[in-house]
Image (tube, rainbow, N blue to C red):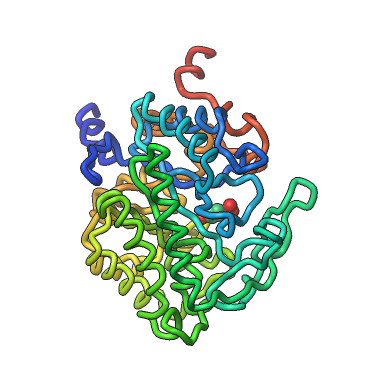
Length: 375
Ligand code: PHB
């Protein structure tokens, strides 16, 4: 038994970008919508939440808007003002003081937004003027969730500006003390909209052929690498995700080609949402797509999507992934790695407190010692 524990795949250290992660239990990027207003500024409560979770092998921050145009939901944090940089410093300091590591997830939502959230009430932007069917966004405490409108197709001349938004976001993340960054190219946000055939009907060099659809995402990733160095840059993709009205006509070809480019760029890791946002894998994982990505991308593979500890152990042992990100279990269990190590019971999450609100459902989930102390 003790030998089994010593050999637990979840607790074999892992070298990532020149840093040793003490375990393979990583925290997913998780939107919690609790930034201070006005200004979408991270605060002391946010710092405490991340600090509580510093035992993760690596924390990926909640998706963070790189620019005012990149914002898609009320109360989500940004990384484009000095106040936001100062707010994030509280978070990175707290995590580092607690012995943890944290990367920032860089986010532009593209068409998943609303004029009420955009500068000057502008229309949200996208590769093409195609509304995300069935997609909703949260515009204010009063109005709640609303359908997203039809976006405006970006002009070809605007692409350089999009790249600059990411470059500046990457610089600001560095100034805020993060250990690395993750480019969000999944779940139906801007870069995913460019990658997938259903949302990109452009006829210029940023659409049409697969190579054209990948052009902007690759330019963005190169810009972020220029700021951080390739080892410190991860990319998150969601090949088969349908959340936010997404569709691709050939996920194997699309994502194995993208993965090959990412391999050539030498990024630090690729995180794959295996299925869809909040998918439950009732029908299994998309093994054919995973195989194709694994064949094309030789670097560190991070698996995401409704994993249990036992499933994660098996996948790591089988060489299907190197690391695993856990989302909802980390919301409810600040000490998730220790619980996995001990095979201890998990707190259940309350999805009514996922988005917005105060410390309730955020920093008040108990850690194991406290449970024991109270028992
Ligand atoms: C959300 O806020 O609903 C959200 C944000 C980022 C994701 C997925 C969902 O990747």
